[in-house]
Image (cartoon, rainbow, N blue to C red; front, side):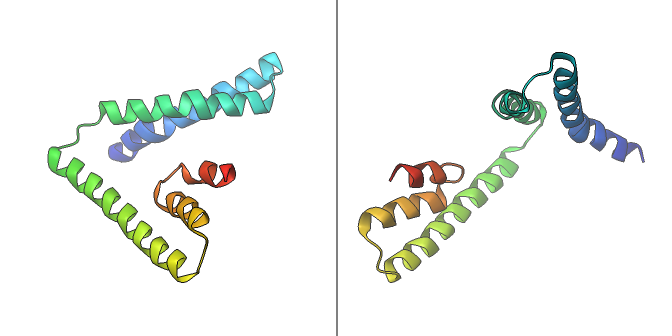
Length: 115
């Protein structure tokens, strides 16, 4: 039971605290929900993620397994996308944009919109 409490405090309490700050700012200062959501996305979420990564002890073996799994996933997705796009007879510039969009996680949508 105490372990569940520790999990709650370590993982959920910071998220709920940030949501509470947003609710307080909205009610107290009549701020725009768009401004608060942007602030949450661009300021508080990266700070929360950085703090969680910085305060955790990760062994070298665990880090290599996570890194290797991420690289293996990206290469697998890129290989499948490459074969599907090549088989689909898509123009080379569109194929390159689609390929980058598939295996560069969290960056591909912006590249597709540029083209």
